[in-house]
Amino acid sequence: MRRQPHNRTNRVWLARVTWLMAVPLVLCFWNPAYALEPQSDDDQFYVWPVQGNVYILVGAGGNITLSVGKDGVLMVDTGVAEMSDRVLARVRELSRQLDPSGPTRPIRYIINTHLDEDHMGGNSAIVESDFFRPLGGGEQVIAHDNVVLRMIDAPERPAPSAVPTHTYLEGQHRVNRFFNGEGVQVIHMPAAHSDGDSIVYFRYSDVISTGDIIAVDRYPVIDLEQGGSIQGLLDGINSIIDLIFPEFRSQGGTMVVPGHGRISDLTEVAYYRDMVTMIRDRIRNAIEKGMTLEQVKEAGLTLDFDPLYGREPGTTDRFVESVYRSLIEG
Image (cartoon, rainbow, N blue to C red; front, side):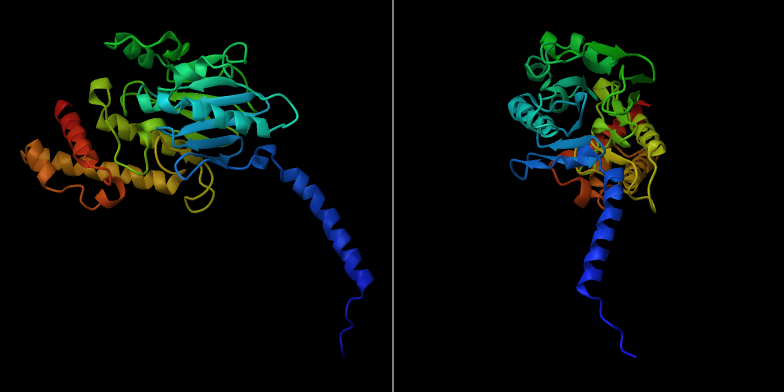
């Protein structure tokens, strides 16, 4: 028996029913933050959505993490000083997209993950801009107390506007109000890349900004002169892993914005941790055998990881030396 084809009336009715069923679902899951489109000047400097209200700005030195929403903008790190004008222009543009007919929401918070110039060199220019100053709505520049202590003790005193206005001494600090629909938690990672490292956890967006504790495209930098250590670095990476909830088979779920490199999930962070652990163990074994630093460098103990993490000249030797010294100095 031949099946009768749907007539036009049935097809129109079916299309209308399907549309009416879809509308509530769209409204239920729609998030205004996802309406903001990625912004790009070129392949090296661009903004990209991470998850929820959180974005990453790449190409201004270290990665900059941005929370953009109804309450304004929160920045994690500010990049290098010479890129400040481009950073401000891009952040203004991103903020303006939320409500093109309304006022541009200002930067209200800056959180510095550590002291390095490629992560906080832009503090002065951004704090002094009308987009942050009290006239613009700026409230706090936050960092661990060790960051400020080292800035004060530096041979060249920094400009007052570069220095964080609020510091914390305990294991964690909470931004003083619910911001863009979520709690923002600043967590100290002692003696990791340095002794002033903080990570920033956006609780609802489920994003962690790590500073230079994780840099998935290169070997980590352990700044021994600023209190860093190989064991503290591994402890910090493992603490970050403990905060991550994967969605499926160690992928998706919590997103990680590293200090350098691409947005990552648990798989990439765990692989990075394993790499650091294996190299530490190899160097420790070499030390126990009585090998000198030069012998360890010549032994090629990182050879299997160099194509991924040692592409920049000098980074491999620097990492091996910092691990060796950290283990020797204990």
